[in-house]
Image (cartoon, rainbow, N blue to C red; front, side, top):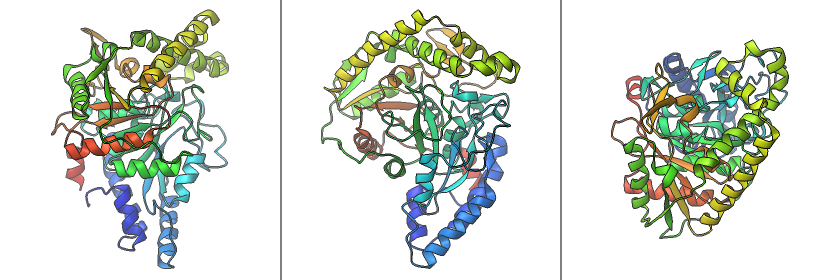
Length: 451
């Protein structure tokens, strides 16, 4: 097998007739057949549909037509995106017998219209409630850099499939960090765009005020292209020659592994940052995010919690029940605190082009243990890997997790945070960091063994 190509390279080669989309899909399916039994990324593989789509693209190229900017690019989606003809399970057993989707999710339609080829659906934490992709129904997705470790979640299948070179592009969702956490642990780029910039039409909901479609790639060019096609937002607000960067401290520089905290400072220095910012309400904001998530999630699933409790993953069920029982007064207090924190964060972003923070408090934890160390205490990885990602989600701002160059060590990601609508600025800064040698996607050893 050949080494995995970027989406940009695939599309340019297919459009120029140097490469057949059918060959790209055949190679992709071979790679998935080889590696996915080990990694457990996919819940459905759409072999026949993908080959049929590839044949149509090849015919269009042969006829002199332009099949689109993502011509022949394989992609896959988290199993909470509607795919016509498939049941959208959202990682659950309860939805397994629901009627199949009558159409694709809107963002899936957009990627297909641009020539991308849907390969399948991807594993996740049940109902997107977790940071681990440990799923009692569909299995635990494993980290391609060390298969004894977690890939992160809840979009773990999406991140691991890209990191392992199974596809160059995938879709996930980020409510409290579910794109940024697995992107960090798997060592790739993961974008949580401005809330609402990419439509959530045709996705299974979790928390309406926070749910955001996200993208995973191995290159900034791929991310820029996929975002432009997926979103309703034109590229604006490019990065200035000397961006003003701030390092988030306090909560964001405590509790985690030292090398993870150092990674954020490394990127801060690479961007010429000089100012450190402490948002003192961050810990309380994280608690508010937990409460708002649990409450809305619990209310959403309350009918099934009452009638089919044993069909839930126990770790998810118990958190949803606790959320459904939260008093209105507690939820209202959390809502009020969140509003204050959002205002503080947005005010800081008026003075800075980018804020920097770690993406996760640790490298990928061991699956068997399921724990990470925070301030000397061993705590649940499934609940706490979003320690630094969750508070930022409240503000609905764009955040890009970039992988630090680590030369064979376990991956570490750093969050680049900008004001709403400034995705193009984040892409430009990521390009600068790649050019500087500080940021790089490193393919896992198991990919080179297959290539």
